[in-house]
Length: 293
Image (cartoon, rainbow, N blue to C red; front, side, top):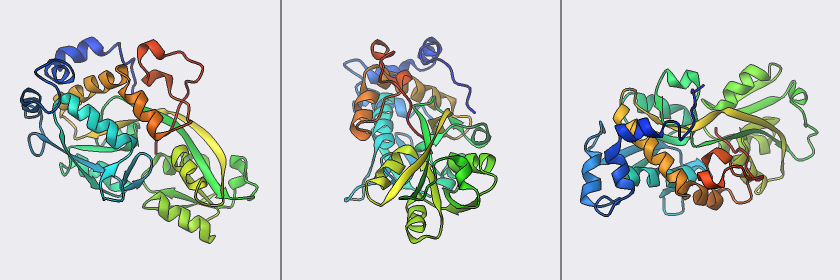
């Protein structure tokens, strides 16, 4: 698990390390897209200076997915583009991968960043570095309507679908000893198996589960809090200047309300996690957590 710290306790140290990055977030001569901002991207150890190559997923709505034009969008995609623009890089190229392939591809230098609501865990930190967290939440067991599964104990003897490499797979292996895990490359394959009766339940994150519940006759049977592994941007180990610049701009985009506005757009009706809101808005009764795969 990532050792998390207060966003604002780290501010002074990150500001000193990434003064150039912050100048891309504010200031007349260094707004994203200007020549002054673009020059900053060349200071980072990127595959192509001035371009960020991102490994993501094309079917993980509402986090990352491709629209009808084949363009990547979703909460994580749009938020990362905002952060990248603040750092001084507007040329961000997304490429779809199976979730289990993202971290190895970032670690071996095929991509600069992995962006797919990737939960930060100790195991994953052995492979890649992570930015600070920007999303956290619930894991959800999806069942056919009327299956009668309401507690983890009810899963005993079931074939439970999981996406390979996700927190759901790790959690299920550790906490559901009496189930048979069936691994899929993505949630769509798991839901297809659920609808065909090949598996008895599928384990996903809450927001993805909510999407499937609006399309199919399924129940969100069990919601399990998982707040100890917030999502972060995955980076190749050792690219500290880039990581610190992303962290500084990530906090900037939380404090100026960009994170809040995108969250409301992509997760309408879901409670917002308090720690990612602007300082002046923290402590509201509506604050809660959301989800990562």
